Image 1 (cartoon, rainbow, N blue to C red):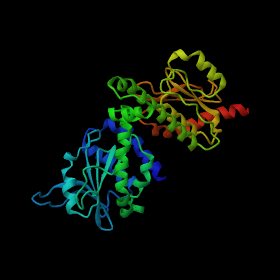
Image 2: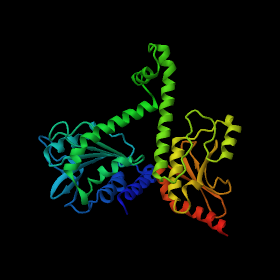
Image 3: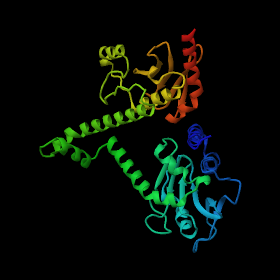
Image 4: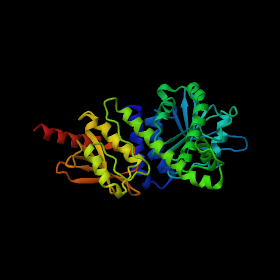
Length: 371
């Protein structure tokens, strides 16, 4: 199994089981140890590789323990401090990491609750752990751009020099991305003013700010929607049919055929809005079944209650339904009798776990067409 597949499998496990774990020890056993083992590649039962309850005397602090020390070439290279899944990760609750970082050979410290992993090093001052992580891995929303950097920490290709050299850039890029994401969601005054002055020549008064704040928010969301859609379409290859972009405030359904466009115009008052998550989920399904049929044959048709993924724009050939309009997301799958069963999902990556069912559904339609 490839590195990314192992990471996705662990993410699915966390999503399915985190609600049942009530203690820190359970979190370690269910999530953290598998992360160290299957993702980083260290034998958690070999004390020459992973030392649980690692102890080192630190000044007047005697007998303090840290959850795990990961060894590489007979040296402590990484320290791991664990919290209960769902617990907020705050450095004031991980003082051992700071102390141990200064008295061991470790250059990497990991603070985790089993779902979110924060990676620290000593960029700001030698042998002193930074206050901010250089890499944040969230298994509920995996950033694919971080996977190559994470892989450098694995046993087989452990490359500390490369990790440290890239850490500075990763640290600030990560913080910038989170700051930009916050502005896309809820722009502050400076962000609104910056863009308003690019398009508006008058003074930036209180009235102008109130007028442009929703416009900047809407433009940001539409731009992000377009970029995500274009990137996913490109990833499927040049042969894929580009998706029509749904504007953030457009009420019509987002579909591909001319008949569907006409239907959009007739039903424009229905207020259907295709979300970014629905577009991403659709593209995941399209990628899963692209070996069975050409990607352009798989389209989506949105409605108020669900977003349907269809073969050949045919309602009688439903591949799946995306029920994303409630707090709990569901993917609806169909059996041979076209009976729908809804499966709860907590992240879009979980859709990959239904690959066999999705392909089987398409195979049934293709087989029926041949007959």
